[in-house]
Every structure is written in structure tokens, then in C-alpha cells.
Length: 215
Image 1 (cartoon, rainbow, N blue to C red):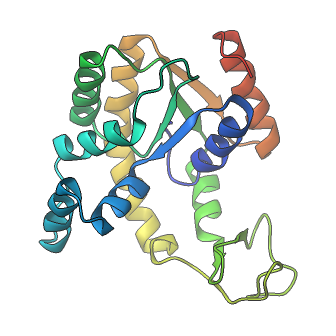
Image 2 (tube, helix red, strand yellow):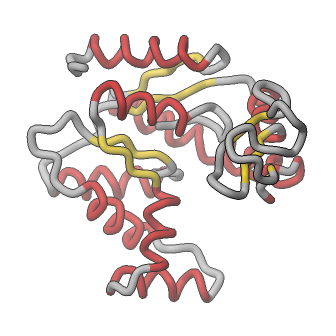
């Protein structure tokens, strides 16, 4: 899954898991879980985190492949948040090739950056169970209070304007090379994500069905 933060990658991935039975692997979740585990890989990850350094690509790929496991006879795996750079994409291709696997589809969700920024700036989460809202598109019934459990709503630190600008600047710098890489491989497809969630989901499902993926 490719696309800027706020393009709906996680939302659409969840719908694809429900409809097609894919396994969902998000690199951020994998790294956080590894950091908290008392395994050899987990201890390696923790050393980099504790030193304030980025986790090297080769270690991240080992964790991703481990989380993917063997999907023999299954519909496949959705990767979200990885690869983020061209070297990561090349390294992932090599690692998958060694397993007799490959990237079948690089799905880019596209949306104007002003729309993406509004989605990110408006995001709110409840402290009790992480229920999500958006002040622009799906506000809670009572400001600052979760509709489900009544807990306080808060904004994550990386959803403030300054942090959003930094994240999108990094994305713009890295995304072009990724898109070119997957275009050359013949697996890039684009879907307009500046539409209602269900409409986007229908477009993605239709694309996968044309590729022969059965629901």
C-alpha cells in the first residue's frame, strides 16, 4: 500500500482483510511489538531505539518476513508502511525472491495534499479504546468526548500541523522513487482516494477481482 499519510491506507487495508482474507502487516506495529519482546530480533531493535537510531533495513525486512510467515494457499499479505524508500523496496524484492515470492501489486492511494492534511489535522482518538474521529468529517456528538465509552479524546503529537508538514515532506521526497520502481516492475496501480471510503473500497475490490483475486 502506497500513498501519503491520511490517504486511507489502514482503513482500506482493513476492508480488504475482511473481504478477501489477506493478512495485514504494518511495519510500525511489527517494530513496536519486536521492541517489547524478549527475542533476539527484539533485543536488536531495542538497541537501535534506545540509541535514538533508525532500525536498519535488513533487520526490518527480517522482522517483516517473519511476521508474514508462510502464506501457502492463502490470498496473500498486505504490507503497510514498508517499503518507504527505494533501497528498502529493492532489498524487499531480493528477500521475497529468495523465498520464491514477489510483490504482485503496488497500490497507490492518491489524494490532493490539502485533503490529506485536513484528514490528519482533524484526527482524534479516545484514550480508553482508541476509537477514532475527525473534527471535519466525522466529529463526536459531544466535543472532546468519545461517543462509545465517554472517555477523553486527544490528538496524537504527529497530527499537529508542524509534524504533518515534516511527514509529508519526507513522503514527497521518497515516494517518487518508489512509484518509478514499481512502475518499471509493471505492478503499480493507482486508485483515487479523494472519495467516500466505501466508494474507494469498491474500486480496489474491482481491481483485485480483475487480477483474479477471489473474495
